[in-house]
Length: 166
Image 1 (cartoon, one colour):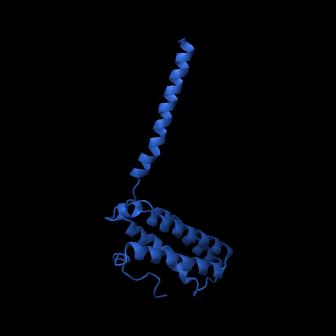
Image 2 (cartoon, helix red, strand yellow; image 1 turned 90 degrees about the horizontal axis):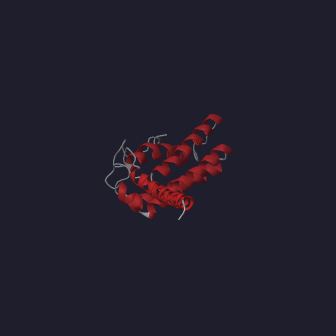
Image 3 (tube, one colour; image 1 turned 60 degrees about the vertical axis):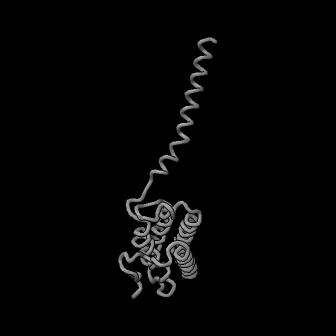
């Protein structure tokens, strides 16, 4: 074997080893990603806070461009919040929940419904924001029935929606 072939072989082996290491790294990184709070805290502080005004908009119609922009902003937060629900946090059930395909489906459905709410708010369409709000409620209620029927918020911030009295 001449020196040229040895260099080619060495290069090939190094490239193969480096590519193999690259394939393992994302899985290791993904396994180490954790939220600094529990999923329940994400739901109580981000999901509820963002979702409530969206579904309430169906009977308390936004009356200004500012109201619609706020709904768009909240819908975007909800879209991100849905994605966050697929990452385990510090809660005792978080790891088990996020490993279940049904949980991840609910998380994806929530993000998708929130994306529709973003589009509805951008177009200032009360019918579309109402439909998106109904879909958000359906996803949340279905997930709670399947995963935590007796613990709606685990009494974080109280049991009532912060906008329930409005």
